[in-house]
Image (cartoon, rainbow, N blue to C red; front, side, top):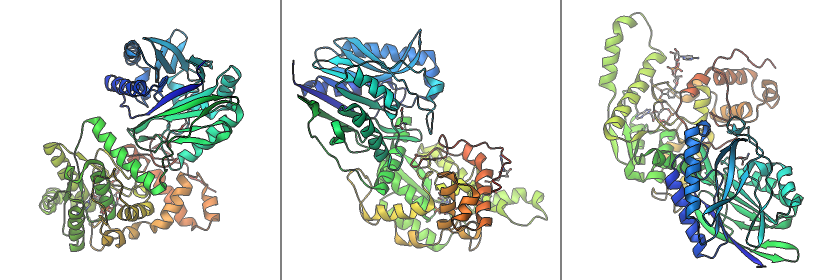
Length: 552
Ligand SMILES: Nc1ncnc2c1ncn2[C@@H]1O[C@H](COP(=O)(O)OP(=O)(O)OC[C@H]2O[C@@H]([n+]3cccc(C(=O)O)c3)[C@H](O)[C@@H]2O)[C@@H](O)[C@H]1O
Ligand SMILES: Nc1ncnc2c1ncn2[C@@H]1O[C@H](COP(=O)(O)OP(=O)(O)OP(=O)(O)O)[C@@H](O)[C@H]1O
Ligand SMILES: NC(=O)CC[C@H](N)C(=O)O
């Protein structure tokens, strides 16, 4: 019996619902494996349909179509390696998230996911039935056990596979990014390796799907947990792992060990990829945004220029009488450094017209946030008109701190289809700008160097909706606001715990109140890439009507 086995890992980016394109990608990877003499080529979880399909996978027509496409793909897998690929499977016993193994024109195995994740962004218990734990399958000389993603986060599936003769584990995944997720995954998988004594392949998808980002970063561990192979995150990679039979069992040869960037780089890459894929997969190649001369729109313009090329990022300055010369200069400076086209559209005439039209109703009232919001909404209106006429998608620019406390105008600066910094607290916005100014990578399409002028980073944030307005007039300093928000949102701390940590009780209560009363705004807000454990959308599902307040 042969003593070697070549497994080709395809860390690739599928598109939800694009069955033909996903199948072609799988076939191209299979051809790479075949040409390299592999015995098997593996793709990630639910690759044929893309992931996550959400409720699409409850639709019989969708699943029938996917299963027919899978059979058609199987018919093309002849005279070469086996192909492992994720896709749904329905039969009279249930509806499954399955891993299909195709070989010599046929489906030779189907491994059904047993543990269905139902935490953070996952609801698989509502979408699938739990399959029985499948046994190992043989490809050439090797018996392979395949826990499907969440299956590997519990000991039982891997243990059963080891007990029933698996010689390696191959885990296909659709595991979404969040900060430092790779450390968590490796800790979990080391436990499986130690429990089973089996070399383990962890293959993850890459690419953005709505708010979720799959970061790849696939890896291979040998028995005892030593790292044999590590793929880079956020890249499409096809590469091979060579296993050799030894007296102690199968051993993976040392392969590529791609470096894993630090937190700021990974978050930045996630935002760039999230924006790129949301647009490209929705059929857009251009964006526009309101460029105020402030830091949030500066960072969004930079992310967009890195994702799409500066020529595809149309910046629009929409000044009013409150716009300072400094803001006009900073916006022009940033657009020039990035190489983005910049237009100027005054909102003054439109504001006069709106205020004139409303004047007879407003008699006797004092100017307040109403007039401020009109300016914001006029900007949204003008930007959407440019979007409609010229076809770019409008980006909205609220950071996580603002989105958390509702410091943004509904139908105003919240207008837009995607928000690249929705899960980035304001204090991280500053640090991210500094990181981008100091670092450039080949995947960034905008120029290297100090693209975000230091004056933009250093000036006090202002909405410039009334004379001398500063964010800090309405909100606690961002260091304090972000620290309280992180404790309330990410850490689920009580008011008493936050106060005990040294924060002023009245401030904590105010932030808690603002967080709860703006739930409705977030419900109507644009999606954005998930970076944390509690992004606003699926990770944290709060009611809009909620009269409870923490009395601790
Ligand atoms: N639970 C709920 N469900 C549905 N609707 C609800 C609601 N609660 C209030 N509302 C409605 O929402 C409206 C208030 O919300 P909204 O109109 O957004 O206005 P509002 O939140 O009152 O004001 C916008 C805030 O964002 C700040 N800001 C900061 C930075 C930039 C910008 C900018 O615009 O560029 C703005 C601005 O200074 C102000 O504090 C009310 O008219 C009310 O009818
Ligand atoms: N004068 C302006 N010209 C163009 N767009 C603007 C202007 N003022 C505000 N906007 C848009 O509205 C968004 C919210 O802006 P605002 O300046 O009021 O608050 P901010 O959160 O401090 O954002 P920024 O740091 O980008 O200024 C901006 O990011 C920008 O997209
Ligand atoms: N697709 C899944 O089953 C995900 C499982 C796991 N909780 C992860 O995030 O990696």
